[in-house]
Amino acid sequence: MPADKSKPLALADTLHDLALIRASDVDLSILIPDRDMSVTEDAEVSKSVELSHEFVAETRAALRAYNSGDMQRKNVEIQRAQAQLEELLRGLSP
Image (cartoon, rainbow, N blue to C red; front, top):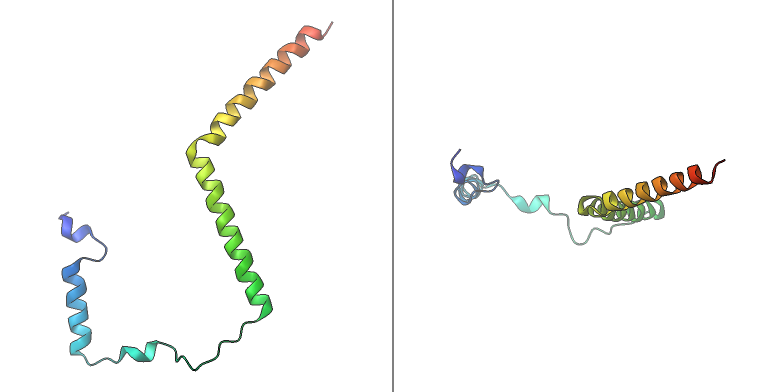
């Protein structure tokens, strides 16, 4: 596969698309909402969005921790400690 075709937004393709839009006389300004339109936010929606942002932040932190290898190292340490405790218990058992 050529390198220029693997780019998601190749410059030549983007320029071609923009030229087609310009030539077709499409008014893209209708896609942008008017600044005069007042946006009323529902408290429930705001809370839901806030919770969603918190969830995403915590999930990203968990994935970073998992991918860093810290969790695997801690797991190995815990397994070693468990093995040592089990060995100690076997030694204390009559």
